[in-house]
Length: 429
Image (tube, rainbow, N blue to C red; front, side, top):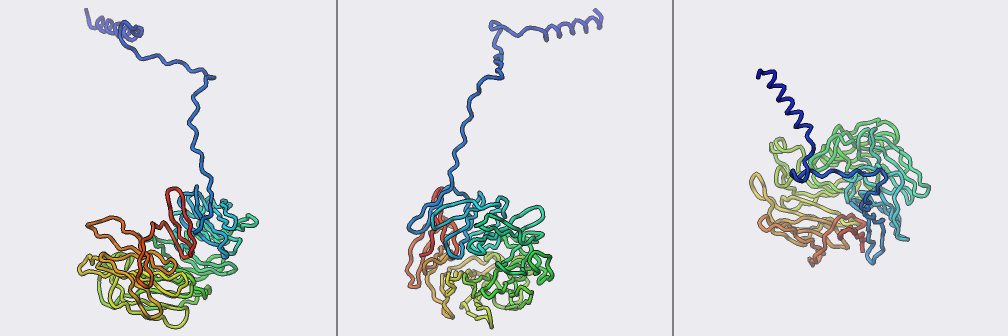
């Protein structure tokens, strides 16, 4: 048989195999034939979605319990203390404490992301301008807008537009604004950029610093400005741009008292060193890296010369004003020798005027948390060998200590704790 006949026979065998019927049960197993589904057939009902719990508020002896809200990141109180705006993962809600109730604020669906709010004094969180008006921010394709919502009429209007996210502390009725643009953000979430001033609703007319950040405003109206992205010189300006430096030294850990009447900062001993040039851009950011110990606390009352308070040594520092601004709580941790400069034992102290009183000590260092009803709440740091989460401890001026529960967030006007799905909003005693 020649090659052409062989190819023809092979093709016939292949076609016959492809055309063979499906095997019967006696020939072996086969795949089941799918049953056609009629277009009108009834399909199984899908599982119902979980019923969302409507947000609710319940009055308690110490404050309020909030349920049905997630990611509560900040609380802003009205001047009377009867209303509060809650910044949450589901938008912003208005809490009425007179007749406890919650309702969503209008037109805030694309408000500034929650990641930029914190539980203390971030200027981008909502704030009451009056008892019935709330200022907040909307981030869009054209930049950041300052918005004002009228709670009585339900209307919202844009007041000022920034080309980039910005920090400002404008107050109701003012015609000028001082702000800094967020040109860069450090590893510690500190933003910085050009510090500018101008008429509200218009383009800026002056640049005060090429690179700096706003810390806040004092009761007298001055805006506090820090040079650079981290620690730097500190100064104040009015809305017209009249700028004054308060110190020629690098100011670390600056803070404004809750009543806005005082400003504090720390400075390190003067020394010549190349470490700030070789270290990270943010000076005094990491006590275990390129940080020098601080040896002096400065307090300024809004006029005249600042008051100098020696600390009696070099420490990694933290400070917190009492809510009424009268005293300052300090966490002072010693620094060991060497390049890593590990923390040495530290202590909690209170400064009243020029006097500093030690209240409690920690062998591995201490961390400051808050003031509450005259007590300083802090943690003793755990040893790296033992690990674990140390408890929060409150100590009064007599040195008496008591253990606290876990704190989720706080500021001078409330404490926010979390228990499962519920938040507990506790007003001060």
